[in-house]
Image 1 (cartoon, helix red, strand yellow):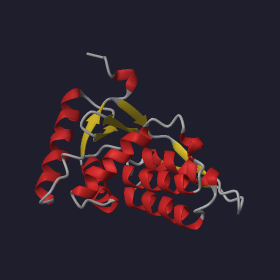
Image 2: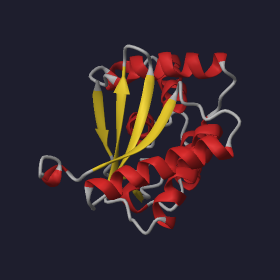
Image 3: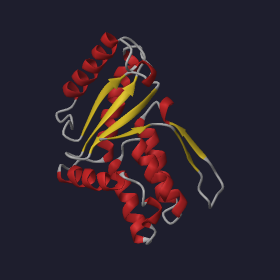
Image 4: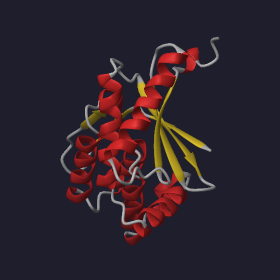
Length: 191
């Protein structure tokens, strides 16, 4: 199992000296984050530093399909060495293959993320951050919103998220990605 904690990502394309800051913990929409990252990928397809940063950025938003696309682009440029220590590259390849077999795109995952995030807000919570737990064995990802509150509140919120996603979509994509709730690290072991 591998955990990815969301943090602020900085994209700084060398060609323009512009900086794109994405605060993932305050993101109102996965789709908006994904669209910006996709824009940067299309705009700077040969900028090695941007591509390396985007691999981490796509992984942080759970878009393992796009991580695999970035990996392919770096491989085509013969510059894959920047991701030599990036353990999620292998996971992303298997995840992308599994998603392709199921005809699932990044947009499908973005819809479910935004639905889950909407439930968190509707229930009166603001995610402090979120984390992905990756299971390399069966190539599944679990996004967990880090939420303050009691154990009972988090349990109820997790149930609301699951009920909404299962009720809203014919295919909840549960064999690829699931959504849940977890406590902040400093309260994880408080009884």
